[in-house]
Image 1 (cartoon, rainbow, N blue to C red):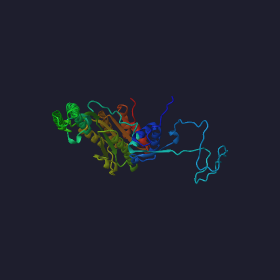
Image 2 (image 1 turned 135 degrees about the horizontal axis):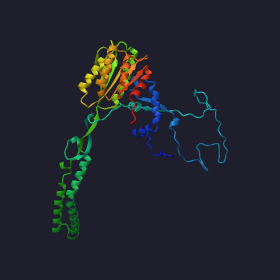
Image 3 (image 1 turned 90 degrees about the horizontal axis):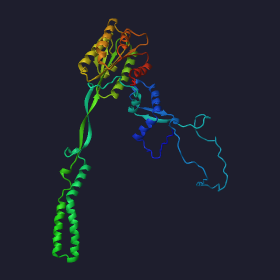
Image 4 (image 1 turned 90 degrees about the vertical axis):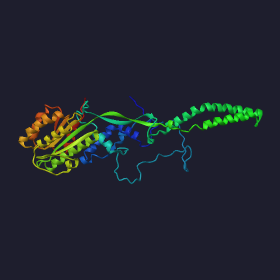
Amino acid sequence: MVRIIDRRFDSKNKSAVNRQRFMRRFKQQIRKAVSEAIHGRSIRDLDNGEQISIPARDLSEPSLQHGKGGIWEQIFPGNDQFSAGDRIKRPLGGDGQGSGKGKASNEGEHEDDFVFQLSREEFLDLFFEDLELPRLIRTQLAKVTDYKTQRAGFKSDGTPANINIIRSMRGALGRRLALGSPYSARIRSLQQELDEALARYGEDSEEVRALREELAVLRAKVERIPFIDSFDLRYNNRIKVPRPTTQAVMFCVMDVSGSMDEERKAMAKRFFMLLYLFLTRTYEHIEVVFIRHHTVAKEVDEDEFFHSRESGGTVVSSALVLMRDILHQRYANGQWNIYGAQASDGDNWDNDSPICGRLLGNEILPWCQYFAYVEITAGDPQNLWREYAKLEGAHDNFAMQRIESPTDIYPVFRELFKKTIA
């Protein structure tokens, strides 16, 4: 199917409308450029915009224009060598004196790529476009009433800041016309009678004086009509409309034991930084609970979670016990969608791994919409992985992935939080 686009009336300014239209038309090329840009960034640099290049050939489109058929006569200023009918030799090519440093090529003309600057929000929208929190459901219990203020016409009372001047002046004009129209009609009639009386009886006649007095009374009544009255004032009316919103909480559990060397801790931090960025910008009314553990688990703030260098032994169940307690104390009222993500190297005290399996399977997963476990190790799966593998088949809200190197972080993240097709 042929589609013709009329570009004659397109705005030449870089307005928001034109920008959004451009991004919709070349979404595939922009998405590809964003994907290529991701590979050259660290996780810390994700929360920025990006300057991308789009090949000029992808931007080109056929255009219609008038052809140069028929006979054309052109006059050029400054001609002192030729007259009409003279034959002009074709200019010789290839002898340019340009100062370019590139080598010659036989591949014809070339056009520079189009450079397009994505803002931070546009970059992140494309970066997280096909990701979501799995099983984010809006059940009756998960709905929290929020209120949105919106315009709802006008009212006759309110604060001075909400006065609608145009609507108030329109009402005042209508009131003056309504009150003054009977007098105005009578004034026009009397003025016509006065003109006739002046022509017939003269200025000093009794009839003229009576007409003048009646006209003065009517005009005084019209002048006494106020220009604007408190009755005319109209105020913008704003009401609060209830809007259901979903609350969600994400538990981020990270192993900082001695078996997690600095490289593994760095990969775990980068995974959670990516997750944290995804959560805080995608969903409103979402809380994030940070839990670090070695032999003892502790709830910490964002800064301590990502930057503390504390270390120790390994008792993973301490983190799951703390998560269970926080879950029951704060989020077990049925109004929250609960998610969990755990990162560890899988090396755990042998007697503790079965306890972790029971805690996760019996006391945490039944409350969760989704729980993701990431094991950061380049070797064989550890005892915690083997224990958790028993839960994977029995719980459809549980997923496991392994990260062996920093290049696996983003693919694993996308695999865990990719959108499901309904």
